[in-house]
Image (tube, rainbow, N blue to C red; front, top):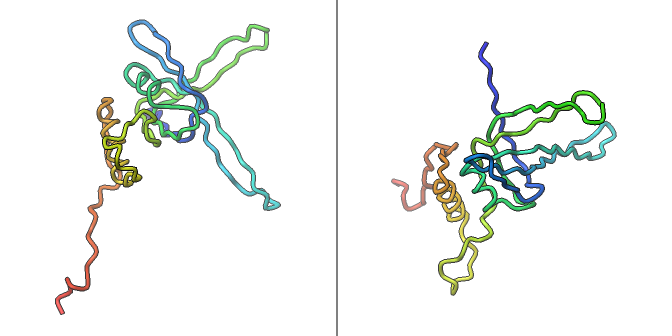
Amino acid sequence: MASYNKIIFGGNVVSDPVSKPMGNSTLATFSVASNRKRKDAEGNVKEEVCFLEVEAWGKQADICVKYLHRGEPVMIEGRLKQSTWDDKNGGGKRSKHSLICEDIILLAPPKDASVKDTSIKKEPKPEDRIKAKIDMIRDAGFQVTRIDSTPIKPKLEVDDLPF
């Protein structure tokens, strides 16, 4: 049977990404926390938090350092990597899982985005914000594919009816 290792993980950035040169590439590391609320048997709301270390390489690392900040929502697609080592204090084998970033979706607008016309103080339309995010992601070299490929049908007006 063929192996398959793919994960899509969404949550909030725990701390600003830290980058360091690795040979002729760059490595950025940061953590993402995903919260889940559920009710226990007594009806009390319990919150579970899952922290996952993320590694981004090359151009993706540069994008993460530039655009990701603590507390911002992000969605990352990639693969899991398990690292194992011997404990220095004689505690036996230790291991951890990391998410190796293959694609990233920034869910918050970039902090350094400038408004083209400063005389207009209106909030941008959601469609404009989404288009700007997609353009930024494409400029970074990522492929963007729409999930909802169903065409939008216009609503009929009363004047459009044939009777």
